Length: 158
Length: 248
Image 1 (spheres, rainbow over the protein chains, first blue to last red):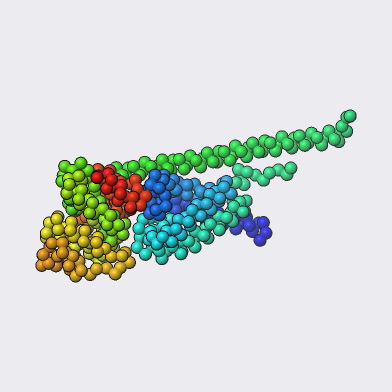
Image 2: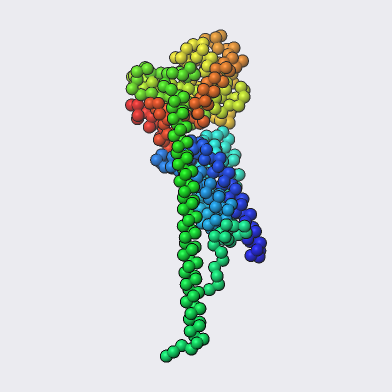
């Protein structure tokens, strides 16, 4: 692809991943108890960390989503986005391997859920795709219609 | 040795360029700092809001749940003047509730008999969507036993329902199976047969479920220890041992 195509594709990737984060964070932020319960259901963190992580995640998701949609500090936001997807993939795969049946709590909800394991393959596929899109934005951080272009104009030639 | 005019011009231009690049770099740093500052501010306020909201939800639940033994939709064991109280909201189909029951029901029964704790079980329908669903049918059967044979038999029915808990994906016990459990719990078959076969306690089921939902119970098991929502656990094993240790 040529540079210009990459810039448009980067914009699309940014908007898709950013919108997913905004929705995920927005649905969770008003129900902190559910968010904490969802984190607890993974049975991966010590009890002292369950509440802080459950409270912090929705806020972090909102800000990463906002940064990606606006295109501000794009590369940094895409790195954080990718790391979050890696963490979620580890979580879902570990739950799957341990035979637990839980709602992933990705978009609110969470906790025990009958037949949830049938969702795991789709959840892993979705998060992997979003991880790839995040990685793409890390590689091509300079995209169209981004606030970064206003905040950080191209360096003047040395 | 003097520089030529041309050399002087080049040096001056280079100095200007360097100065300009330094200014740009400084502006860049300032902008990045400002943007990160705004982000931290947003995260901080969002987390602050979540903490406030979470405490509010807990306080509402604690106020609505009241004390153990005070609900019309539960069954309590242990004396009213026990030094500790436990309220457990649960669904007969929820596997975590089943796991909690398996790990605690004997010890809690013993501790209640010793007067160390009063435990109130408040089953409600969290997972069922229609009156055909097992969550509703089992709760209906529990209510039938409570109505016909009193709280002692109802507690036995509660324990039997968990001891025979089906998997969430089925197969589920039939109404005949539930009737057998009710008789085993101490109800007379002729008293509860009609209620169990025809969802005769659906009003009680709805009222118990409304009460739990109005209190803000959104997941099961939800446990209150001494009137406070108990959240300091990482797994059901942890919850069970924490509760028993607190009242032992």
